[in-house]
Length: 145
Image 1 (tube, helix red, strand yellow):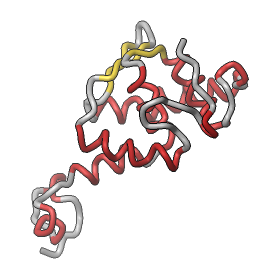
Image 2 (tube, rainbow, N blue to C red; image 1 turned 60 degrees about the horizontal axis):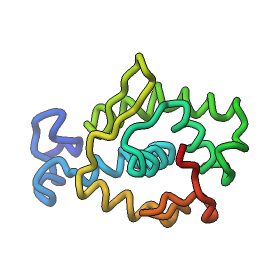
Image 3 (cartoon, rainbow, N blue to C red; image 1 turned 90 degrees about the vertical axis):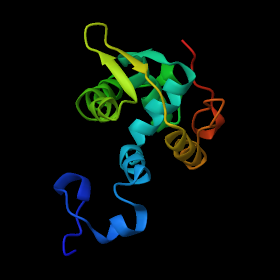
């Protein structure tokens, strides 16, 4: 028991395994949600299970900026979109949470496991997002288009 790494990757038993029975789903969910853009993507996707990438990027940029989607700077939207395509969407897709159609640039929410949804709900208030209503930072409503 000298290896303290993740036993799911190397097949060895670790002290963590003795405590949580192996790889923890909570650990996976927390790693997935550690990036704020991913949390905001999931907040939006819970409202609308299918969303175009550019619309999602604009809504996330608005949330991060504490403004409305119409007021988002186009350069900021493009930066968010690039980060989504290269980092966040692949992570969410690998977890089976979303699927991404590159041809139509559309994301679809495939499902949120109940424990992940509970963690996401717990993050909503500190993020300034209403867990059910999808309100933006400071209570500003997000666009529904």
